[in-house]
Length: 298
Image 1 (spheres, rainbow, N blue to C red):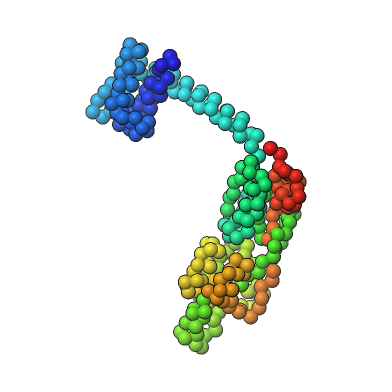
Image 2 (tube, rainbow, N blue to C red; image 1 turned 180 degrees about the vertical axis):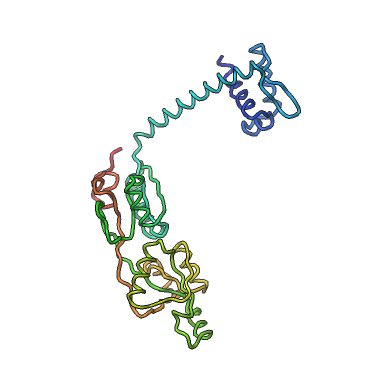
């Protein structure tokens, strides 16, 4: 029996694929070696397991009977392996994070670096989506902690402000000069291309509200999916991008980008970590709120 275990695995793969050549690729074994293994198994069992043809191989009645038993046995082995993995993984603490791709890159990464250094045994997963989707995942208990721009209503959540940000419009100096040459008699808000995040983004919604309150109507809007693309498009002179000032601080200092006045300044907004109220004291989550929190349970 013990000598046949590897032969059964080869037999099962050939029976499942119906092809020695396909089985050879799946098992990383040469076709002659597979044929030899099948012949040896047939000799050990004193029967014929396959019918050979130019189209491949098919099971004989004895082969079909053996295939069902081997299939059941391999399935039980898989269950056993999965059970062991599950038992081992139950003791590994897991933390599920949610944040937009922008906040993940510009804010979350530095906090994650510190967290991982302190708690290397915690298994972390990150899902990237908008603030509203992050809150929905928290409601559904599909994530444990979110990094979001603070919405107006946060009932049932614990929110800790992390930093304040401010929206602004930026572009290259060359783009501004080109607009003046091309459209000398038109206001910038009517002639230029303004690049903004899509309508479902909380940043876009906040900017829209401010533009409406100050009676500023942009004529040409190009929607872009990420903050990174907004910045890159602005840098190549594609248009005027609505970005978060903190995230283009280096570009502004170097003069790669310049701020574009629109007649008013955007108010400061809060970014912070959020979790369900009942989870605020969790040893896995609390370190994001308080650096002095005790080490998460192993």
